[in-house]
Amino acid sequence: MGAAPRDDLAEALALAERLEERVADEALAHVRWTPPQRALLESEARIVLLRTGNQFGKTWASLADAIWRCLGQHPFKTVRRGPIRAFLITTSWAQSLEIQTKRWRLVPKDQVAPDVVFDEVKGFRGRIPALKFRNGSVLFIKTSRQGGLSLAGGTVHLIVIDEPPSSARVFAELQKRVMRTGGHIVMSMTPINAPTDYLKELADRGQIEDLHFRMTPENFVPVGETEPLTLDDGTPMDAAWCKAERAKALTWEEPVVCDGEWNFRPQGAAFERFNPRRDGGHVVEGLARRLPQLVTQGKPLKLAIGLDYGEDRLRTAGILIAVEEGERQRVFVLGEYVPQVATTTAMDAAGVLELLTRHGLGWEALAFAHGDKRYTDAKGKLTIKSNKLMLDAIAKAAGSRKVLKPTIRSAKRGPGAGQGAVYASLKWFHERMIEPGGFYIDASCGWLIECLQKWDRAEDSIYKDAIDGMFYAARPWAIRRILATTRPAAIHRG
Image (cartoon, rainbow, N blue to C red):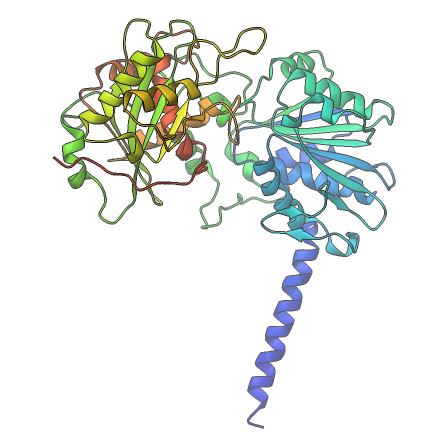
């Protein structure tokens, strides 16, 4: 008799575990779809676009639609019987891994082919990552950065696109992939981080069914219910939440990131939260000397430099920053090298070393260095300025015969590079400037301070080179990846 309670508890725990597994295997049956999601799921258009801001669950809806189409059974419309071949197109492999995890959570596991192996870190295993179903349907995973040629050669019945394709050429290539089968293209996106003018033109012509939903409380209430969805922490996605989300956005970006509009709002200075005051603002006299009092005790502090070579004016801008790492990232802009005349690489090297020496630092104290793209002539020959030429010149000016570390990495290549890099960097600095104590700049950085007040996001602006230098310096954090092995940072405490 005494063992009965333990037996009952074990049985209850086993039952709970079985129920949890059942819910996981039937996740699609338990999703409460909102009006924007339901609109996508019910659409029978050959090419359909769900266009919203962030936080709308666009990816969940497009993945659910793809899974049902692969199964050949859809609760909201008639679909082609399986098996089918499908592409899932993402902008990058990192984004693909996140979406693969979402897809694995949604798919009924009893419908997955027995040889499918999913890894939470590496995604679907295999030379060509894909989700295979028992009925023979296959959903292949590709990135738009593979380019149009890599996407060619495959005829499929369905293409699912998460976020804007990298170019009109890639989208045109994808259209060809479903032409012969009479297949469908299902897109869900916030119009940002890639050109979308060609998509807007197609939507205006009626060649794309454009499902557009703004950030209003009713769009977060599941169909047939009265209460809104909640975040993981229990916060209801109601009118107060919508208002708070809008407050987090920059004024000029709100139409896109909140409401999914095609274009940003015309606005003045990009850094609208930058406060140039020296008393209570972001500008600090003698910032390097005050770092010991400003940096959180015990938090890692790393140095980085960003170099923009001034494509048109050949006026290199070098920006030196320190970043406090941890859950709360804080940035300290320590100094600038910003000649107002055209310079040679040798002049730039001397100027950058002077900037470091001014703070009691050598090149080896840096954790990261990122520079602008290489400049080449029509035959691909390296000309004028480049990261390699700059590093060699710095080594020569420093009297070093060794290859300097860290190397100057390209800010326009590798993970996170491309159309979205500028926006990601701007967003990151915006968040630092909003948070009290999250952003400081030394008063000696007169030109960068002026640029922060006057740059209006124009590509040809005279204020952009220094801003780019700051963005490049912060690349390991703003793009949310550490791209090189870190080195201990030394800060002059004098």
